[in-house]
Length: 320
Ligand code: TXA
Ligand code: MG
Image (cartoon, rainbow, N blue to C red):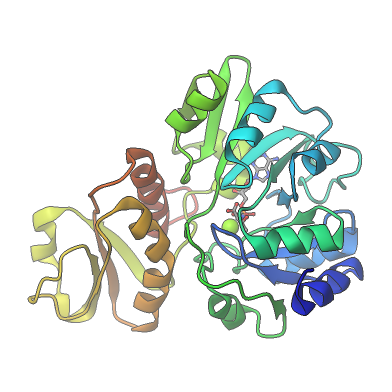
């Protein structure tokens, strides 16, 4: 039996409401994918540009086949290896999906989240749910219910505790000769290659083409309001440490305002957004991120590098 909270949240969703829900990556802003007005409200709440399509959340692979016009063999292989889990798959969309969800495009991005509350909510609603990250557009994604409430105090928020992964899902799409990773995440190229036997390549990091292919992947994203910079090694010596807060992996007594970050990739990812939010609240002149390294999959470090470079980008085109 789902909890009373999930049952009433599902009812709210079936009545065209918007509800925030936890996933293993970040919290999402849920709405019934088939309800045009509810989906529009999600765009309005986030201040999200209409040209940026939403991810559709499903309870299992069979629900995914109802939102996809075509479900290729490679999608089957990925779903069987990684779902429920932090992988979003771009496929041709089904009629069922209103154009507002896909920003008028012919493809839909679909994922099955690895979180009991999210799965219970989708099952109880009995509909696929749109679920962009539950933050105002361009800001830092929320990894706790409190983060969501701080931006959307009037919204129903299902509290599923802190997100275990902490950065958004990997987004992939199929090409004629392989798989393109549009957004790196905890599931890496080598995991994807092993599961499908296809070559997986990271879509180019910058440039107009990327922006047009997946508009949400603008360079400036996941950004705190305080100016944020990445420094490498000795560059830290040039920073005015009295006016900055430093995200560092070493508990250096000479740094007055610091947040000590984990040294393993999964731990770092899980902590990153909460650290950026805490740093932002200190209202210093600058947030300094010391370029991280450490144990764990190189692909997860790559996803972390992607997020911190966006957090520190200074304009929408990523040209500092
Ligand atoms: O981990 C996640 O994916 C979280 C949780 C809540 O599930 N959701 C999330 O959604 O990050 P959002 O909307 O903040 O990011 C979705 C990304 C955007 O960059 C968007 O441009 C891209 O996926 N996207 C959505 N539909 C697409 C499509 N049809 N083709 C290419 N990219 C698409
Ligand atoms: Mg987002």
